[in-house]
Amino acid sequence: MQNEKCKMGSETPVVVPVTEEYHVAQARSAAKLLANGLGLSEVAVYSVATAVSELANNLFFHTSGGGTISLSAVRRNGSVGLEIVAEDEGPGIADVKLAMQDGFTTNGGLGGGLPGVERLMDEFEIESSRETGTRIVARIWSAGAMLQPLKAQAWLAQSKVG
Image (cartoon, rainbow, N blue to C red; front, side, top):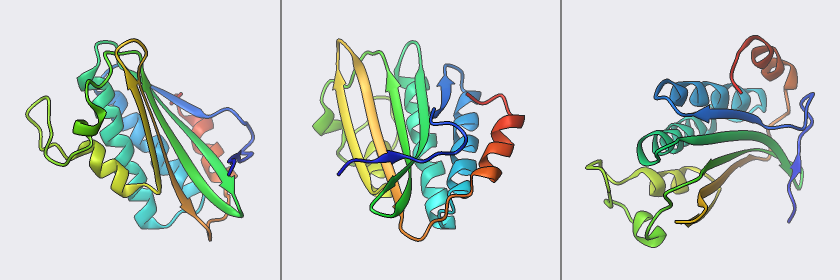
């Protein structure tokens, strides 16, 4: 089923470049604000914040040049959701199946990052190759959420995120 971008004054997603460690906090803040603006539940807002933190940390710590976190409001079948896209240009994940197993780590962490993001979100897709890098798309849905674009737009207009 096709997703529609919600109209929040702009059809362009909020894009947060992640090339410095403090960009992780910027991405997380933008995600929380947009999730709140969409009327997602408090649990969903914190799930989004946790997922974005993990994905942004991966961009900073596992790539040489960082990447981007893109956040978009989406609709499908009367539900409102938030789509998170984390992209980088390399070096790719050598074994995606292995990376999605709890406990697997390449840098001495707990190995719960990507599997945790998958559990927190309603949808999770990952594509990775040595040639093109990694692209992760995650979505969370709330059938009862009401789009509240003014709250989100006010914060975005005052911030330098994206």
